[in-house]
Image (cartoon, rainbow, N blue to C red; front, side, top):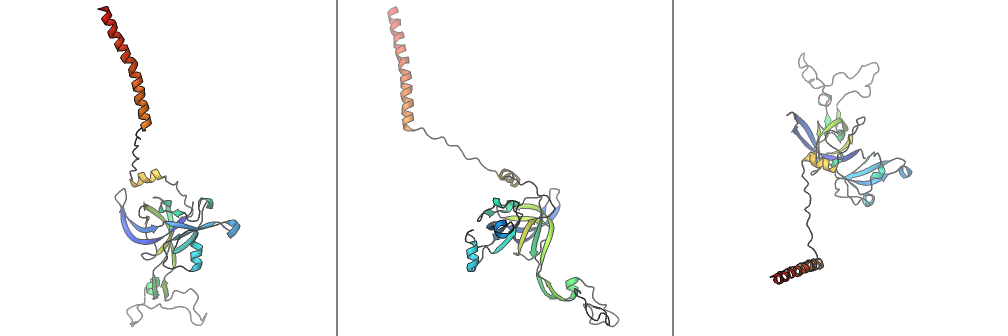
Length: 270
C-alpha cells in the first residue's frame, strides 16, 4: 500500500461531531493521482512509487516523454514509499479513498510568503519602551551582541529578514471525513499554505494504519444505497413454444379417447 498522495488546499470550515462539538477542519482536494513511474532496486537502487497530480498547461519535451507511458500531463510529481511496489502499475489511478476517517496523517505544504519582515512580526519580539526618551525604538531589535568580545554577531541571531515561504509539516492530524465523489479530505486542524497551495498527505510515522474498508463498507459509511439490477426473464424461443404446445396436445389426446370409451360403455349398459 502506498503511503501518501498529492493534493491541494481548498480552505477551512467546521463540522459537528457525534457529541455536538464544533470541529475546525481543513478541506483538501486529494487526488485522483496517477502512477507515473515505479522505481525498483535493480534499476534505481531503491523502491518507491512516483505519482503525479494536476494538469500542466505546458510541458517540456523531456517531461512529456516521461509521462507518455502513464498517459498523463501531471503538474506535480512526488515519490512515496510503498509496502509492495508490485501492487502498482504505470497509469494506475489512486483515489482519495486511500485514507479513511480516523487515520492520522502528516500534511506538508509551503507557508505563505511575507516578504522582508522585522523582528517584531517575524519572531514576536516585544519591542522597545515608549518612555524615557525612546521615541523611535518601539519595534527595534535591541542589542545584538557584545562589543569588544567577540566583536561580531553570532550566526542564527534573530533579526529582520525574509519571512515565510518555507516548507512546513503539520504532524499527526486526524482525518475527520472523506468525500470520494468530490475527492475531498477533511482533517482536523490547520495546514500550512494559502488556498490552492500544493500539499502532500502521508500516514504519520509510528501510528498503526487501520484495516482498509471494503467497497460495501464505504457505501454503508457514506449512506449510499446500491440498487441490485432487476432480473428480466427472457421470453422462450419460438421452437420451445412449439414443442411445449405439441407436448400438451399429445397429453390431451389420450384423455379425450378415454372419455369417448366411457360414453360408449354407458350406452351399451342402457
